[in-house]
Amino acid sequence: MRALIVTNMYPSRAHPARGSFVRDQVRALRQIEGLELELFTFEPGGARPYVNATANLRRRYRREGFDVVHSHFGLTAWPAFAVPAHSHAVTLHGNDLVHPRSRAITLAALRFVDLPAVVSTQFADRVPGWAVRRQPAVLPCGVDLERFRPLPRDESRRALGLDPHGRYLLFPHNPSRPVKRYDQARAIAGETPLLTLGQVAPEQVPLWVNAANAVLVPSEWESLGLAVLEALACNVPVLATPTGVAPEVLRDLPGALCSPFELSGWRAALAPHLEAEDPRIDGRDRAEPLSATRTAARVFDAWRALLAAKHT
Image (cartoon, rainbow, N blue to C red; front, side, top):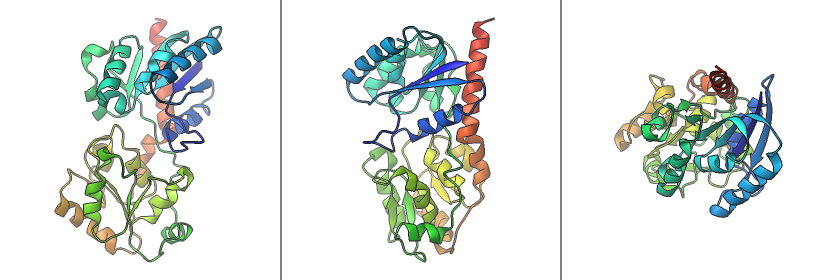
């Protein structure tokens, strides 16, 4: 099988953290035997990057043949149509269905897509039935279990210049993003130092996760909730609102909380983790089904099923 990934969600020198989950999926796909994969990325922005991407894709691949062209982010489906293929697919990630203008452009593209996909079952509810020819598949970009794994908490703290014997909480997002609800995380933390990932290099994120007594994810909404999976992969306690995959992966997990934000309840759930010397939970098994390797295999299987259906 020959496939092309088209995306404007990909790390760059200027933005090394952007789209790291798409990069992880691309790397995992490239390990699958029998799959020849190419990648086309471009910078996001206004209309001009999409116009340029369309022209560049048409010029670069006008004589190429692909079985599947798969876009990441709804708006990128339009330039991807410039590439001839047996099938076109797109994974919707969040703002492509939430931002009003992006949503309108994305929904207009879906009628021409053979395989629409979303990153969580809950997020599929944002796709109206009239906009698609088939029910969206659930094809998340998973967590890299080699990078996110349990590390000694005291060593992680020393590497980051933190007190090995202190108490720390982690808000695993940029505080400037209102939808992530830093204000609520700040209220929960109280006097406990609250670490954030606004300016953290991607390769250091596993250290910050392992350095924390617990990870706080009080988001208004998540399409997937990768930060929850990263905490689970490190066996670090996590408290999250019931959005994205959180209800699925945190259900009945001792030491974790999945609940609408309520200050006293969240503080009560958090208290044991602040008192413990090295609080951990058995979270890694919950993250494993949503690893980058497993989710890439799901994408490949979806491609094969799509092509098989087209040839019958």
